[in-house]
Image (tube, rainbow, N blue to C red; front, side):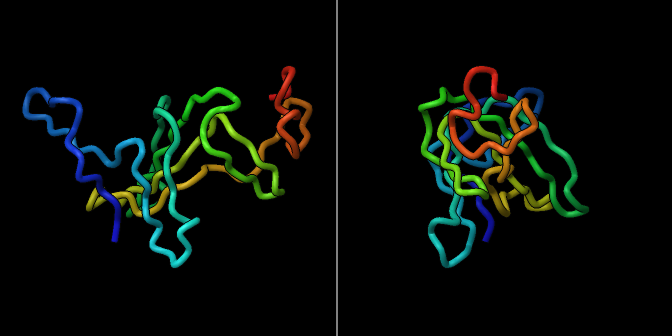
Length: 129
């Protein structure tokens, strides 16, 4: 079962254009796994976005969430580093149904300006990224 918000659009389409929102901030996208921690709640307010064809059936939407360093719930990188603040999410959208099939953090590793893998929040401070 894919995710599509029941909430109405906050934008009126013009010239017969129809706006159908995928999700509303605060909603949790069910990943359809037995583990509730696999579900994804996009943080903050979506900002920059970009999309590309992931395969013939799926469009991947990347969304930047601009948050201050101490804002948003904590997320964990592959090496166990826990961070808060800005991040990028992915949303895999079925090309036919236009529903979200899967969503989550778009990366599991961060490389700072020195070319080093980030393993603590201080690696991102003082021009670290």
